[in-house]
Figure (tube, rainbow, N blue to C red):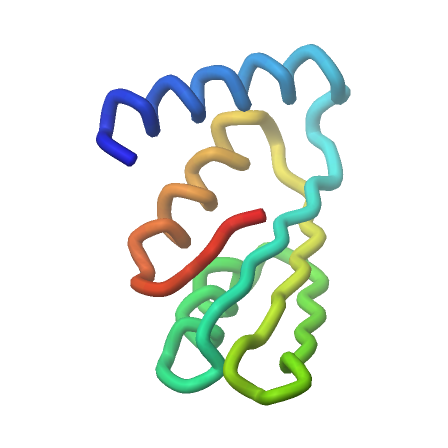
Length: 95
């Protein structure tokens, strides 16, 4: 995905979030990451000190870990900011 498509996606997401929730609001992120490596730790660090509830589940073969993160954020911009930070981590799939 190139930067212009990414910006379009995030602009659309911000609009949808602004229209469908009263802020501050609870938001749920879902990510799939390789179990080996530092991605899980890096994501947890991004949400550190935010009051986020993070649950993880390792796949049946152990190759991947799914992370579900529920956190209260102040506005749609805060949601997108977290997605962009996590998006810099190699191998992360955002659902």
